[in-house]
Length: 228
Image (cartoon, rainbow, N blue to C red; front, side, top):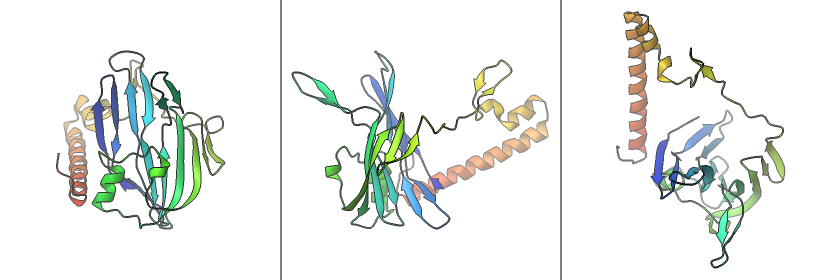
């Protein structure tokens, strides 16, 4: 598995829309290559009203080996009417389609920008989908309870228990993340005044950071993104 992320965010009058942009790639042992991206998340009530969180936009999954594609609309909620307002759909509802593509799926810069970039194109109507050779099946469900593909349930919260991160507690019984800076090895050894070991851990951390930065810069150059 490989890929990269770019954190995006945009403030509205009373909300914040954010997400992770960039393609994720999974290559299985048999050579099958799947590429996918994450949706956007909308935090409401940032200024006034109740706080809310919802998934918006669409998500794209590409089977590069078999030239197939899946597009999922993550939120079917829509306001209707003008004088007498109403609504249809649900904010947690997901619908999608899996289909064979009429054109070869590529990984060029234009394709990455369109499907996974900062200003990626979002689908809100399956009639607008392009390059559909033949529809294979439908996707239906809710991120709150279940997921069905071609009528078969693949996930149900009543039966499939999500994997949870076990909490870590400090000496004050405060919950902290395993990635918290207080768990840094160099700082721990520095606290106990083992300067040589602390220095060695700090060097390891700096080497890893330089390696990660070089990979990000190489990815930017390869995909034609400007340095920022």
